[in-house]
Length: 397
Image (cartoon, rainbow, N blue to C red; front, side, top):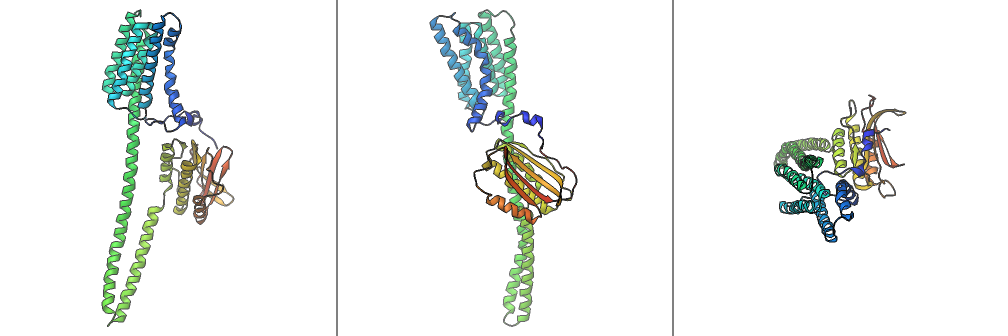
């Protein structure tokens, strides 16, 4: 089993769910790291405060102003990444930053001009696009004017940095908003698909049973009228009722079987969505080749995948999951193999649960097998069903 080197480079613990607030301690630490790393630009004001070139009063005032600036900046940017503030609070916090940055730089000198970078970032990350496109150049202009007062001679790279970082954050803000909208749209599509499937089943049952039940009712009434005087004709009507009811039962079973039987391709897509939604890094094949695979065998593998992904999401505590679908030649003949491997704890149960027991029975009916258990760094489930050999059908590797 091999893994994509590029996939290994992006560790799950370093990933940030865009457009969502942190839900656990690890996500808080990751987002704090991504935001806090940019505080490196505060090294100049801190060094200036500790240099001893200011009076005690100026040093204390500068320290208090810098603390207020950092608190307002982190509150605005950190919180706004997940659960945005109201526009009034955003404007209030930006106003605090917009006042402190020029006042501190104007009063304490050139080392404090870096505060305008944070003001530009905050404007780009929190304001609407049109407002940000006006606020960021205004921030650069104010920085330039303050710089002239404190001794900045002409053009400075910091002016370019203020504009570039600010407009870059405008793009990041757009990405966050688009991701949030896509997530909501995906949930809506899933809800509509579920409703459409319910309507399909309702239509099928109505079409299948409406005629049959009407016929059964009519023939029952006829048999009741014929029973006293024409028992032979009544018996014929009852025989017709039995035939119609048996056919209706067959039709209902076929409809329900078709409704409940999952498809492997659909389950793979659903697995990718379910795992990604809970923050698990998922490697899932897109469209495996199922040519010649019996429908019952495909359905059994689809049920196996659904059960495995449910266990990963609910019980494993994993942050990485690898799904593979492969054709293999075994001693028992050609097999289609589904492998689901995660790096979690595998749950706390002491034995196989009801889900795995029922899954084993389902695979045995299709002529397949199930293997599930702990491995060196996680848990693996392997399901196999008989299938024609047609080469590797792809994997998440």
